[in-house]
Length: 463
Image (cartoon, rainbow, N blue to C red; front, side, top):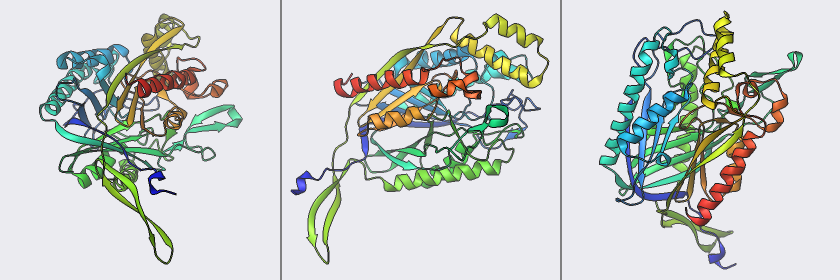
């Protein structure tokens, strides 16, 4: 076989102008931070690790409008009005089009409430000023990144990490599912790592796209914490000397095996586990703009194939798309009915569940369908897909299978958060992901269908 018939191998990459900035977004002491129905307290007593906000600004040319990805150590948006307010203020301050911003939450369950509807609760008066502070910090970070971009290459490579486990556990005696480690079902262990390097080969930033609920710390924890993301960040940033962005994957059915703890050492151990996997993947990458090519056969004790890393090119293509998907809604009580039921309930746990249902109903309205946006960016040989719901991991598995020649980053809890998207076959079960979500059976499959079709269009027609 002629050596030219051996395919050249390369990491997925993008070449352009990239800026990086990182700021702290730890909330003030005393802010309302009850995230668990089983919790007996409303306010955290201290800080385990600081919450961070890291951003990348990306352009293919100096005169092109940037795309901006923000990764923040925050939980989720209970109230769509709060999320829209924060994102609108950021977009207006930066004169940025809506399709060019992805505000990605890590989904930590040990952070502050982001819901101004909680204003009447202990520490709730601090939420609105905190959201204003998050806006200010984000705008400052993005402007800092835009003020000093560098010619850089964003390189991607897949790795593995077995931190995430399936968390849909059947409880046959009660004919329901618990939310916790199920050893019988496999879990998607795919890790996607990005590396930003300047012209001198210095690392400017790293990205980790991994699907795993940050639910290590739960009702017994009394500290503000990024959960395992904090320990991972410390390890990776110490080794690389550069900021790191964590992008939560399609983790609707994934979490650590041991969780719901008050032990911050457990969260830190999980962080190191994921951090070492990130570092191992970084070590496996070729250099920026490098190809791995077959050079020649060498006759020795055995006929040897000599492969070498050589200079190559990185794509400068940058395409942006935002699509709307009309999801069917399940039959559910109206907003007024939920508010009445909440007012009459005296059980602390059930009252919390009703409050969350009320917040969801406020987001989707009292109709039978709800339109939800999905953000899609093609950066060279990669595709970044961001959506607000908690899709099950099958979504990212299907997207990677559909586009094997591209690095596919799939992100949950982007520009909002509403409900779960479990597979259709689970809707007959009594399980949290099914009764929590407002979206009806088939919604995950609809997401996969619409995103796959749009991605094919982007890659083939270069929108």
